[in-house]
Each structure stands twice: as C-alpha cells, then as structure tokens.
Image (cartoon, rainbow, N blue to C red; front, side):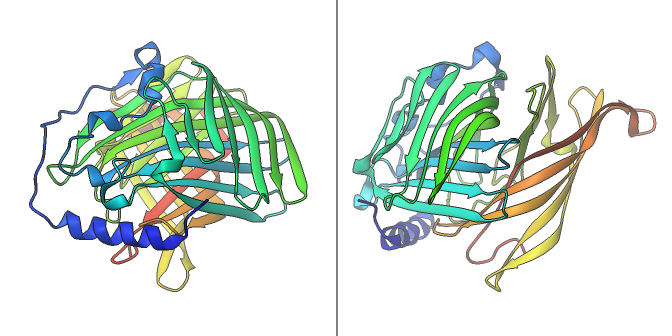
Length: 369
C-alpha cells in the first residue's frame, strides 16, 4: 500500500541534516562525453544505483524515468514518472514515488502522487524495466516501451505504448556538483516518440492513436531539497523536429538539444539567454512563470534558436522535498542561420509552433523569488 506524506517529511528532514555533515566525496568521478544515437544503449536507460551503492552519501541517491504525451486528436496531454530516492534504504527511508498528471481539453488538471516503501520498487540494470507496486514500465525492445500506471483508488489509469522516433541523447554524464559528493546524469532516451493506448480519468476513457511523446531519465546524488531547475521540451507530430533544454539546472552544465530532420544541433549553456515572466502565485508564498523566452547560438556558431513557451495548464507536485510545477505549454519561435559578423539571426530556416511540456521547480524555503 502507498505510504502517507509522513515518510517523505522524515526523509526530507534527514536529507537536510545529513547534508551539513563533513564533505566526504567518495570515489572521484569525471564527467563523460556527450553520446548520441547508437552510442546510447538500452543499459544506459537501466537502473544505475549499483555504481553508487558504496558511496558515503548514497542516502541522497535519486533516479527517475519520466514520460509525457500530447494527443492532437483528443486534446489530452499528460505525464507519468517512476522515481526512487535512497534505494539503499538507509534509516529504513527508501522511498519510491509514482506521479501522474493529466491535462484535459476541458481545462481540467488531474493529478496523483503516491509514495511507497522501497520494497515495492524493482528495476533492471540492463534496460528500463521498472515497477512500483502494480504500475510498471516494460521494455519490449530498444525502441518500444509499454507503460501501465494507476492510482490506488482506481480513479486514474493509463496503458500506453511509446515507440522511439528519434536518436537518443546522453546530454550529461557524471557531471560534478557543488559539493564533492554531488554528481548527475541526464539521458534523453526518446526525444520524440509515437504513443498509442488509453488513459482513463474517472468515468471517461481517452483513446490515443497518434499522440507524440517523450521519455528522459535522470540519476545521481544531490541535495534534493535545494537543487532547483527549469526545463522544457517539445517534438512535432511528424517527429521531424525535437527540442530539449534544462536551465537553472541545479549544478548541471546543460546542453540544449535540437533535432531538425536528420541533423542534431547542440546549444551549450554558456550561449543561453532566458527570461522568465508573467509570474503566477501558488499558495501565497510561491510563484511560477507562465512565459519563458529562450535564445541560444549553437556550438558551431551556425544556428540561432529563438523560442517562447507559454504555459496553458499547471499541475503542482507539492508532496516532494521540493516543489515541482509540471506544465503543459505552447511553443512558438524559429531556427535561423546565425550571422557571426552582426551577432544577429540571419535567414530563417524553419518556423516553430507546437504544444509541449515544461517544468519549474522551487525550494520550500528560500526559493527563486
């Protein structure tokens, strides 16, 4: 059975107390190179805790597998995350979480967040097979995953098949953090995917026949209640274009990824310009942006991307050690040639207008604003 929020509060307090201890870095880790396409394997999308099981700060180990979808036919979009914190079960506080948010065409937001003791969690090291209680990800083959999830009361469920339609991207590999023990990796295993199946919300069932989807995977050790980030992602229904970016990304040196037909374009963090605006309030003390402007020049100096994404619906995942605002949004913008002489965009190569997803996170105490 799912556990109540008390276990998560205890875990959060222990994390905060342990973070102030002496900085014992454990084995020295070096950031790996970015990998793409056939350089990324099914094992990269598997469970990575064995690499950290003897680390002095393994209490802070966290790993999650995230999936989202946007269905143009029904107007439904949503996400589901399978996550684990402290899988070594120090102090008997190993905690798995199952999180599901759906945004309906009628403007309603349906959300559930359920926590389980680590004994209800299983994952494979060879691939992304994961289960939490009766919900699971089953890897059919390297390109095809089946995701089934439901809340305990049975009011929300999904049964979806994700079929990869774009080259995988390992965008961050063992990136060192602020403290000597912190380290993070970020794998975008499915920058775009074709999604079919069904989603049930109460008495209504949505059939997805030609939805677009996305799957990424994060793992490592970091001070979870403190390390905040912002993120955004979209792909187009024809799977010709995909975009992914993390910024304010905790300690992670981020790379924005853009696929245009058969071309992979990478935008390094030191060439990002971002502006978050149109701030909305949540429960008086916290705010989140409803619009973000993003501009970046790629690593070669050939391309410039200009994007604006506007939030349409928000699900507040408030039971975590930090606040996660999971958001459906609309993207508009363009990819252009970059004029290095003038420092301005040149010829427009393509226009962008499509729905996608974004996230904004905040600390419970001492957040962004």
